[in-house]
Length: 144
Image (cartoon, rainbow, N blue to C red):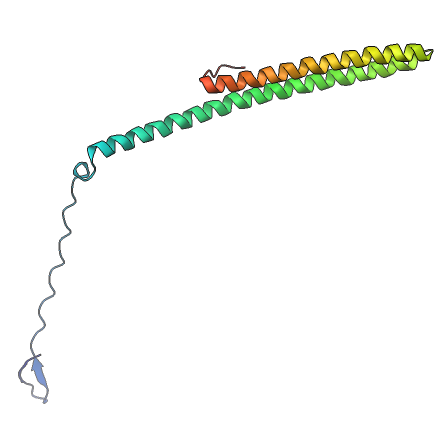
């Protein structure tokens, strides 16, 4: 700093500091339409629409699968309850048997009936599950 003179007390005066430069004005923000390539913007919009459609499909599929699951669960509970009642009836019949031949006949009828009922129930369950998957895959969201 340059000395400009002396002070009475022996010190020297220094030149005044230059005023701080005004803060630089922020650069003008460009319009976003000119920053994004229109084709890219269209692609992004298409992607957002596709994601939205996928989300809606997933929600609908989830609702259909949940509804199907509840129906399958309810059907399974009814089947098990029926089976328990039939098992009790089977044991009561066994207690009434008078000889080994009657025991054999009661057991044979019980086993044949049980095998048929389990087969029918499994076929019904598989059909219901396939229907649920098909309805989700085709977008048919009606109750199963």
